[in-house]
Image (cartoon, rainbow, N blue to C red; front, top):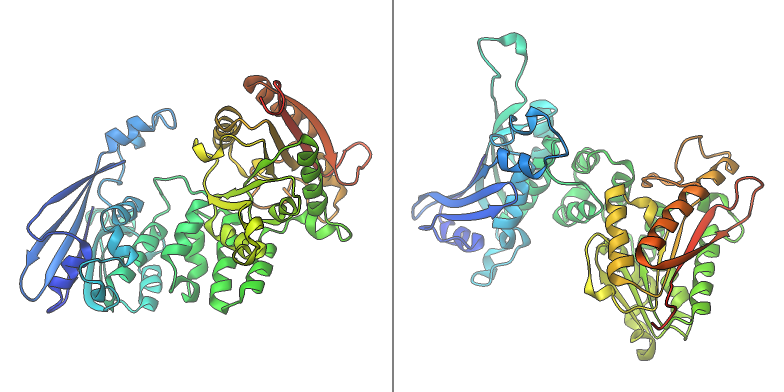
Length: 474
């Protein structure tokens, strides 16, 4: 798997400084899938070619992933030989500073366009040469694509999806690396990593300045996020904000629309969301908690209500989405808050998948409409992070009651309230899960419904309040 980038005449010195690689050195980097080697194949006063060669270890990877698949294709496949998502990972790791546009020694070289020639060997393109051109040509590249025959002796096997690709363009090195990082995985759907919400942030970050106006932005977004509808819609709406140049207030409106669920649209009086937040706040007040944390705080709607209660001396909002935290900061007007209020609240970026020392020591924590967005393995990880490691005295969890969905005529049977939900539990399913979690981690749990009650199906939202057996202040 080989990628080469050649700088044009009289640009060799700037090119080498930007890549932070010495022309005389052969460097190797350990990667999760094998090794990445960075070196220069030719150096002269006029031009230089930088090479990134990946040595993928299919046997090692198959052993790591054993249990997920016992099939032979775990060992025998095209991954060691084609340019795939492995290359994007290597670009970010080996050429990360150049991709981010950082160069301490020659900062003036960062924004300079260069005459660059990029060669990608054996790129699997699901969609053919036309699709390949439709992605690169709008970015200003001259594209030369040479198809690779599956086997010339057996034409009945059809056309090969593999291409040798050459791109020529006058772009900054940072632009080129970001284009490659995003687009290489778009051509090939076999990504070696789990596509979660953090991939939205990566797509928006690496696509900044070009993706929002790309004529194929929808196709790029869908393929990059592996056609996961909820995440695709969220990313496209964020790109729309960028393309239309909306102001901060309009950003909040678009973001709210992106997260709107069926229940919020149908409840026209006092929204279910407001009732849910008020119920959670009341529970925290009754508990006597002073230091509280909103896990999965999103755009800060609950945080605003917590900030209004002087009882809460320390309030933390944590979310995996950097963009959501930026909107929360604007919505809460953190920069203009009086000093005493500003000292009480803080936003942090983090994931519920990993143990985090910052989460320890709180009186109360809440997960409001969070758990239903987690796949089962991630739900199990969240349980350990919150109930075993962070271990607040009170944990409040809310989630949709699947039984109530029949009340809403506009919600098709069998459909979830939000496209990003991984599950929606009945009351008995939620209670079973909650009691197991409580028993395993030394909590007691009680249940309460939120919202209007319908006969036989309960309320639209169900809440579990977990309390450490030792009580608050232990």
